Amino acid sequence: MTMKIFKLHVETINEVLPQTQCKLCTYEGCKPYATAIVEHGDQIDRCLPGGVRVLKKLAELTHQDITPYLATMQTKQKPQLVAKIREAECIGCTLCIQACPVDAILGAAKQMHTIISDECTGCELCLAPCPVDCIDLLELGPTPETDSPVLKKKAVHARRRYEFHQTRLQKEKQQNQKKHQLALKINTSQRETSLIDKKQAIAAAVARVLQKKNQNSDND
Ligand code: SF4
Ligand code: SF4
Ligand code: SF4
Image 1 (cartoon, rainbow, N blue to C red):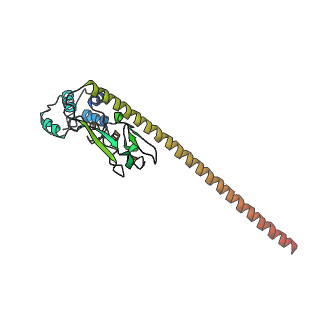
Image 2 (cartoon, rainbow, N blue to C red; image 1 turned 45 degrees about the vertical axis):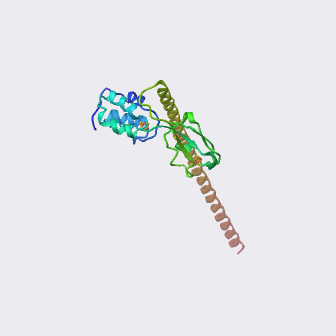
């Protein structure tokens, strides 16, 4: 659907999304999906973790009829999930930490990793990168079809952690860029110094040869 929705803000839509950040909607996270709905009139049935509950909210906010989407959403909506690492099998590769959008995994290189259940949104993004397939998904219950303060609180918390994670990544990227530029500068200056040293060494060798030649011709 390419309907343009006016007087609707990305923030208003983002606030009703569950903030699982799972990318199942085919966007990079909840906010990009909210942006696609507002700016391009994208379909309102893409959020499977939100299920019928979020579908109803999106239909209400965008003034659309829920009927064409309802039956499919009832069968496709995802239950509430939490991930758990079978710690004895973990090889400490850290790949799951890098994949987690809300920093819910603790561990360091070559050490056992563990998931903080209260912070896990059940997004499943850590499953695919795990080379030994030691992460399980546990079902916490069916997708709630009505709003509740607990769900709202959970979404606000997940969003905060996701935004913190994004800021941290951005800072790390900037720091890495700075380090890379510094390393480049040092390498260039070392190359220049070694070039100067080489030139000086050649000049000194040439001078020595010439001096020797001159001495030889004086002796002749
Ligand atoms: S919870 Fe997942 S599917 Fe729903 S909007 Fe957020 S990223 Fe998209
Ligand atoms: S631990 Fe895994 S499932 Fe849980 S939020 Fe992080 S990436 Fe998603
Ligand atoms: S990706 Fe799997 S093996 Fe690697 S640290 Fe995470 S749980 Fe352990």
